Amino acid sequence: MNTQKIISINPATKENIGAVKQNTIESLTHVFDRAHNAKDEWANLRLTQRARILRFVRKILVAHMDELSELIASETGKTNWEGFLEVFTTVEHMRHVGRHGPEYLRTEIRSPGIFQNKKCYVNYVPHGVVGVISPWNYPLILTAAPVVEALMAGNSVVLKPSELTPLTGQRMTELFHEGGIPENILQVVQGFGDVGAAIIDSSQVDMICFTGSVEIGRKIAIACAEKLKPVVLELGGKDPMIILEDANLERAANAAVWGGFSNCGQTCISAERIYVVENIADQFIECVKQKTELLSAGPDKITNDIGALVNERQQEKVMAHIKEAVASGADVISGGDDLSSMGGYFIKPTVLEVFNDNSDIMSKETFGPEISIMRVKDENEAIEKANDTGYGLSASVFTKKKNRGQRIARQIRAGSVCVNDIMTNYISADLPFGGVGISGIGRVHGPEGLKSFSQTQAVLVDRFGLKKEPWWYPISTGTKKLFHTITRWFYG
Image (tube, rainbow, N blue to C red; front, side, top):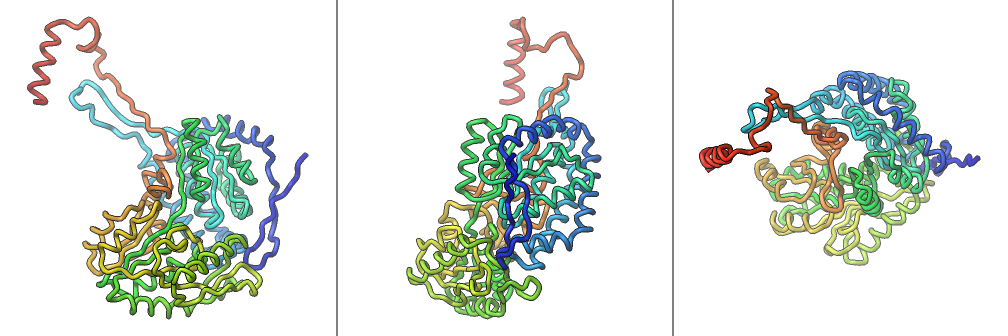
């Protein structure tokens, strides 16, 4: 019997912090059978019953929040504070789903239109078994959010955490079971791409939710399309930030530094491309530089601001983007140093002024502790450059005129836009989250997210039970004339 294990490494220290048993492909058949056989019992619970269980699960997570924060930080290399923020965001989303899930998923009465002898309504019913494939950069919130929404909608779930952060997914699942989620309703499987592919390929898995890279997302989209299997894809971003001439520069600079460097820049809605109107560019760049140089990076998870990148490959990619940008004419405003001598995968927080739109650091997702600033002449050029990408996940606009910011937001091709803020939209649990273009398909969070994990079923009920409808056979000449008259009078 195959007893291979997946070892979890702390990227900040390169130490082995634990291991999980790797699932064989053969073992997945039993997992899918259990999920399929158990789904109806869970689906038959009332919405309020499922919400009550999820509220109790939330309380369990809060009771273990210090443990979870520490585990997240150890497994990802981020700081303890960033690990705690992930727990905080998770329980806020769970609070919202527990409180509003029954409201969003209850039966909706719809108008029967002209047919007042009919009753029309919409049911939101479960898909059945949902496969959730989650990423490494936020191993709790990007796992828990789709799992909770799928469970609230009445589905059973097969979860595959990232092979880089298996311990967090394993522990989260244990705590969900402790909180009352039946073991057959939420199962965790551990493995690499072949395990994910088996989940997608299974005829007993009815829907897929994947968060990860565009490259893998495309393959999953093709596989699901061939099976006509519903899929939600939360993919990458190259998120623009627009700083207009009337912006509050102190707030904008603070947002840029937070958006660019939190989680060591490994955030799909970070501030990777900053477009600043040229008549305030010098002030803004200097402000960002000063704030960046106050930050510390290193293995101490308590005192440092910035943690590690997830592995050597990611560190090499980010350094390659920085070096290519400099070779293309970019100026290093701050940082840019490889800090591997600290023992982990560290890079000094980097600020660049970039002049070449086509450099990798402006066109490809970097996913590291760098922000690239480019001067533009006005808001029109800023909007044009912000939209000059295949990505469309998130964006932000800074201006003291809120109406102006909201007008510009409508012109930006992105699934979400913040005005005078950054990334807080993700914490706002009632807002849907997802991208356009190569940034993804579908939505999680809010009512739209819960309904993504449901099938929309339309129901029409006849009220009176007459022998036949007027348009059923046989149709008399008088009936035909009557319908012509009604149509001309009512719609003409």
